[in-house]
Length: 308
Image (tube, rainbow, N blue to C red; front, side, top):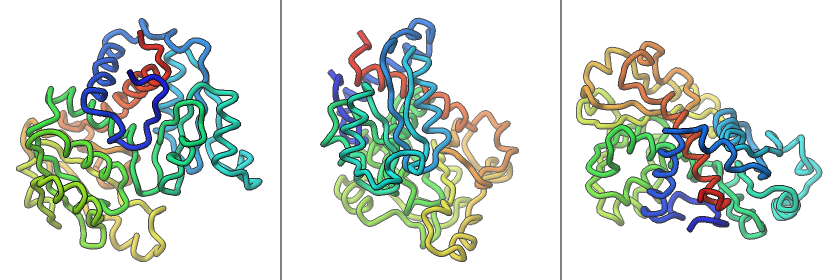
């Protein structure tokens, strides 16, 4: 039973609880109309302390499609945060008005703090370079829908592995399933953080390799998970400009990939995937975005306990 729970980290839910969410999402996908009044009378608060298009729209669309309503702010200067209000006071106040809250924050751990003061479920929509659990649910549902499994997969993560919270979250999640292995493709400056390498990969004896050239491994992969090099995570503009075009997937590179491989991307992309790849049947990133709305519909329903 997930009613009243928070989702702060992808590891907060057991594999069985995740399956419960995925099964419910698949029911919604098959017949969205049936669930269009599930959240009648319920209110979702969106507390976005940094810019977002897809994640915020996805949550808002999910709640509206369930028949609920949405309140909130999309950047902190339009709220009392600009006056210096603490996260604790913000969430206590929001808890008086809404039934469930979703928070994105540039500081790692901020949603965790909010959850300790909240009387309503809090969903972490990304905290700094740390984790992004609902993107992880999106990614897992996408993979499960395509391969009908979450085990025995070779996954290549490419681009910004240092600051990419979606990468950190998905590695943690996929490490719980049998016989998955990872190829970590990045320049030296953007390698996976030590805590992921030590606490997740090495600790659980997960098979992985770190490489710099994507061409060398393209043909081995079941999934290629691309990420953009994030300007907002760099303190040095010169460093960003030097690294931003390190990896670009185009039609030529796709010729080296397996016929049943899929390309995923949490979006937004800048230029790391050429537009010509969009026409390839293996391009899954826009399907992934749609799965994101459905999995958030399922999550909201489960946390509110309105899924019966």
